[in-house]
Image (tube, rainbow, N blue to C red; front, top):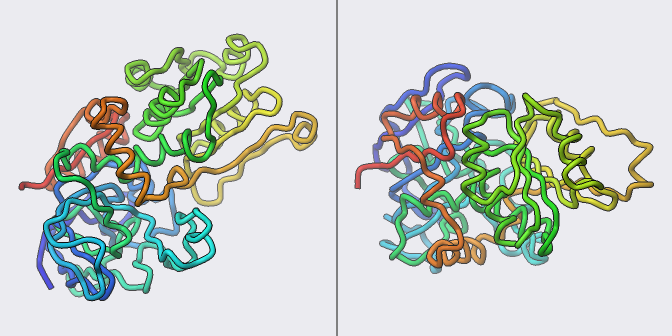
Length: 368
């Protein structure tokens, strides 16, 4: 067991506190990682502000991180002390139906209880009580203990402070385009939301050689970010009706619409913007109990498809190293996503900046 600092949400809608917590040594099949960097993610904000009502507290936030393996538990053979790793919030057993059929993000042996490891434990305590962990990873901390399948070994000549973002926003956004939707070259694409994930959908669409990449948001600074990453057109939804604008631009609607926000109105707009036989890919998670309304009569006749994309349909052992190589080759800009860095002690400030729409992607960097 070690003592370390971590950023904690003790109660929703209260300031994030940084305090000393206890972390157990890795159990069988687990590894302990010294965190170098951790991304500031909107999913964590939803937990902190109470939008996702099923998240227990107190909880350590952070579902996107990278670091150096400090200890390995019994039976771990695929990674060792000193290895560099990107953390995945989707541990996988490698043996269940979904793992062996190429969909490990749906592993049947993941914990059915929120904010816990697959065996139901958390390995963390604060002031004598159980401390929960966001997205398995709990990366807003100095160390974390995770299943070995959540620590994906990477080459050690890339900056962990940058490639940490592959662990969630890059994989989720780029993967939604390349893995989930498999967008063909020349396709017309529209994207709702230009936050950390939405900007990576933009990058994914550019990698796929999409013909038109239209980005919708309500903040001009976010739309400016989108243009830097490959958006060919942008629409401020506070000033213009995005459905009408998209139909005017494309004549028939877009072939692919991606929703990188949990706003249900955005999902409905994305559906309405589709051409016949188009596909709407929903990435963002709406708040607890929120419902999406789609007119039923037009579904069959239009042959439109709505589908979800969970973690960019990731196969993390394959896709994380692939994203690293795309970054090294200059085809994937991760450095440009980061417009502000914070220390662990500034975690509350980081989430206030995220909520205010100031961040493309913020990163919490530990002293190393």
